[in-house]
Length: 630
Image 1 (cartoon, rainbow, N blue to C red):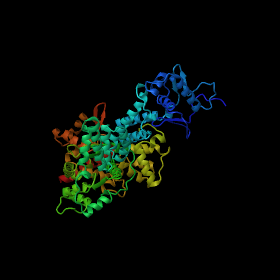
Image 2: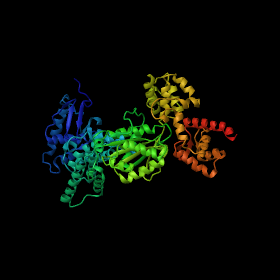
Image 3: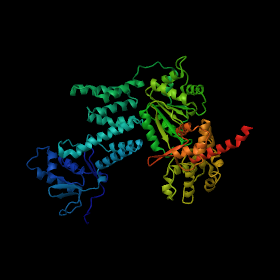
Image 4: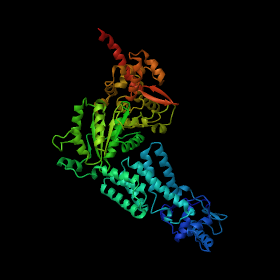
């Protein structure tokens, strides 16, 4: 049988722990510990020459025997026979290759777990840098899961010759800290704690690692373990180094002490205890439709909510703010010890209605005469809580005041608001929800089209409605429809429901008619989400006369324009020139006018769906103007 000229593809090397080499599923016997270490040093530097002198220095830590060269040659010969059993005795090795006084292990890098580890860490860092926090966490998790035991090949040799192994150990700790920094805001504290525990045993004086472990244990609901962990490292630092914990550790300790579980137990009513033992989700149904095309938004939202007490989700009418917030809330509700309270505010028209809605979520008062805020604070003491104020526009000022007061009284509570515009509270984090990505005007294959978010959402909802399938025959119509609807989630879902009664080609042709566009209807859900007209009327009802007039004028222009052109186009609107900039800014804040940044220049535009409504509303106003004058 001819000897292969390349490495056997089934060989794999695991060096992130006790060295393991497998041929398929079978582990190979690697011989003595020294022979195993030599192979580990070659494996972590696969496809790079390693000098024999460096191997000797690493194996005997600077004190080699006189026969060290012969011993290394013997190890290499044995490893060649082990790894290449089919190689003829006089044929040079194609796996452990000699060149002068160096050896090179030639093997595809993906066959060595250390290289896969480094690749995953690079991917995770890149994803985190681009804002894909949840995906970055998963990459770090996958990378760290490759480790077994205390270190690479459990090699304890010191000195520069063992630097490749030491570098992997350092990268392991760097990745673990990065995973913790991502995982805690993402409410994945249990996974973070499980990852950090074995590393904490390896590095009992690593303050940054232990600080994150303290926070992770507390976030997972084990406050006692978190406080015990802090006390243990405090004693070790004192006894072994004669120092006190640094600022990072002390800050983590203070944060745990402020958490509700660390406070003195409060007297609870039977109802409060029942809520503590029972469900953690109140105020909104947990059955939510699949969220499509928003993974980046979910990761960004999780990061903001983890770092700020108040986060507001803003965006154009119908873009999917509520769906995003409720999906995030559902994810939070699955966490250990996490409570979610959802308050729907779309039909609240004053502060009294807001109080009534909050009372309904709080349940019976635990203390006679307690205010709504006192009852909320008592409820929040039961554990970490996410309070969602959905569609807060009608009571924005009251919601802002409530969020400010809760933030001051309850540092362990996070408030998540959905609104057309920011609340304007100091310390508020803002997440802008953009329309879903649109297909380009040029032709794409069906497979490429299916991966575009707006197309994916429309096709999924259309499949649910009538079994629709994207194919070559309808791909052009689907792409055109998604562009006509600006990638707005509500409009796409309404259009998908229309396919029950009309072909997609007729639907696309009919979308040129604003009346059809605005009156597409679906059943269920909040009243202002059943038609696009209802959704937009709900927003327009909150505009001043000046804002409506300026929006109607801007809607006449279908293409993006500069700020100067905006001012020129609105010159004939009955709004004082000095007030125009403020009116335009308010429309931008309320997500009715979009601003694109192109080459450092701002370009203003009104989404087609919003423009259709604004033009129709402007026409109605113009027709009714003579009647008002009679």
